[in-house]
Every structure is written in C-alpha cells, then in structure tokens.
Image (tube, rainbow, N blue to C red; front, side, top):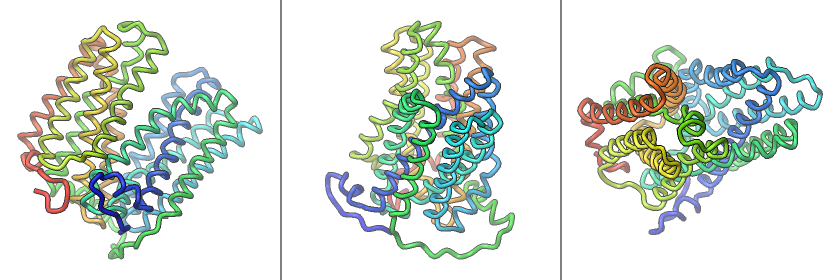
Length: 413
C-alpha cells in the first residue's frame, strides 16, 4: 500500500500520495473522455439516421456489456493486477475513439460501425469502472479512505459537468477532431495509470469455477449491511429518476427552453460536486448508517419539491440538493462496501455493485417514463420521491445492521 502523510487539514494526506494523484488524474481523464464520447456519438448518430430508435440502440450498446459481463468482470478484477486491467481497458477505449476518427476521415462511418465501436467501448468500461473501485483501497489507508472516495467522487462530478459541454464544443470543429481529442484523453488516463507504483498483494489463485465466479453474490448475501446498502441505492435511484423528465419540465412546466434544460441537467452534478469537495475536507466520522438513510430521505424529499415546483430557481435548488444528498449516500455506501470486503473479493463485489447502479439508472428512466404516461408528469415525479422515502424507512427496519453502522474506518461497528 502506498505511503500517506498525516496532516490535520486532511487534503495533503491524499494529494501527497503519488499513487492516489495518478489514480485521480487517470479517472478524470477517462470519465471526461467517456462523457465527451457520449455527446459526440449521440449527435453524429442522430445526424446520420434522424432516428430516435438508433439513439436508443446507442444506450443499449453501452448498457448490454455491463449487464452481460458482470460476473466475468469481477472475477478478472480479483485474479489479475487491477492496474493492468484498467490500462488495457483505457487502451481499448482509446483505440475505439481512434477508429471513429478514422471512419470520419475516410467517410466510411455508418450507424452499424458506430454501434459496434460503442459496444466494444462499453465492454471495456464494464471492466474498467468496477476495477477502478476495487483498486482505490489498495492506494490509501483505511483511515483516509472515505475522504479518498469523496475526492474521487468530485473528479467524477467535475467530468460529468464539463464533459458534455466540452464534447459539444470540440464536435463543432468536426467529428474527426472530437474523436481524436477523446482518444487523447483515454491515452492520458492510460499514462497516469502506468505511473502508479504500489506493492501488489499476493492473492491465492482460485480455480475458474462457477463457485468462484458467483462468490461475490454469496458474499453480499452473507453481509446484511452491504446487501442493504447496495439494494437501497438500487431502489432509491430506480424510484427517484426525475431527471429523465427534465425536457418536459423545461418545455411545458418551467418554460425555460433548451438553455434552461442545460442548467437543470447540470444542477444535480453541481450540488454533488460541492458536497463531494466538502466531504473531502470534512469526512463523515460517526453514525454513518443513519446519515446514509437521512441522505436518501432528503433525496426523496428534494424530488418531491422539484416535482411540485413551478419556479425555475426553486427547481434548480431542489435538483442541487438532490445531487448533494446522493453524494453523501454514495460515499457512505462505497466506503462501507469496499472496506467491508476482503481485497481478494473486491473486484467481484464491485462488479455487482456497478451493475446494480447501471441497472437502476437505466430502469429508473424507464420507470419515470411509464409512470408519467400512466399518471402524468408531475404525479410521476411525486410518486417517485415518496417511494424513495418509503423505501428508506422500510430498509431501516429490514436492515437494522446497516442503520447501526457507526464509523466507516477500521474497527467500525
């Protein structure tokens, strides 16, 4: 494990850790590239086909690999050097962007080629994301791990805010240049990952068998607190997917046009970024389980406020609070899952966790659309927010071990 330096202010503890700094920049580069790629591919696909069906296929091509490869991903992350897995993934993603750039320059890029590349990039990201999660505990001490999670979350939120805007800007100069820029960012992530030096843990080699592959599922089922944390996030995001209906609010309810829609989409990430920076400096120390439940309840309440609001400033504030509450829940859940899981099992548990998060995001948007079609847009958002609150209250009774979690560091209860 890399050496860290104690400092009461907290920030130098992480940013004097060379391995963590390289990890942070690698994650920023890769996430920024992915967000830019999503904008460029979506825009170009619609320009080529004029079909919203093909836009849906792009989303399916991104989601399907993560769902299909979940158990394989975790097994690979636990058997191999996690840094090497991430490097290979970032190289594959960079090659995918380069292939798109070459297709643009030769004029041979069509919808099927784009979908094929997106599927390959999605498969690489299916390996990269949970392996990134599993690698972080190897780079910092357990005492500063919650702070490291918060700093890592801030990088993700920064990329989520800047990525789409940068993607649109570079695409304006031409799709070939956009894909070249994206490929360069993936290469930067690869270089930073190559700079990470750490003592590799010696793991006992397990035979490749169904029991080993499904070990992550068995481990989660045997730990009520971890099962409760993962499933709570699944249902909270599934029910609270109000962001899928933002275009309707921007056009028909708040009447703010496309510029207002952009601000509405940025508000949750802005709130999440501010909260992650705050948690990076002042980490959560006690009563973590109850704070997690409290954050989910605030998430649901903010969703209800947004659903009822006809004021643009109030709607922005509600979405920012929603994003901030979500980060509190994410930091606690991620710290609990990673620190409560043996290193030899972290890849498989992280893969299942990532699959649940991806599934809840995709199905949450679907649930919002179906509920809106049945009951109307405003009732759908309110129902989702109330459902999130009810779920949190129910989980407090179903998973009392999760509610009793106190300290997230070593020796937690």
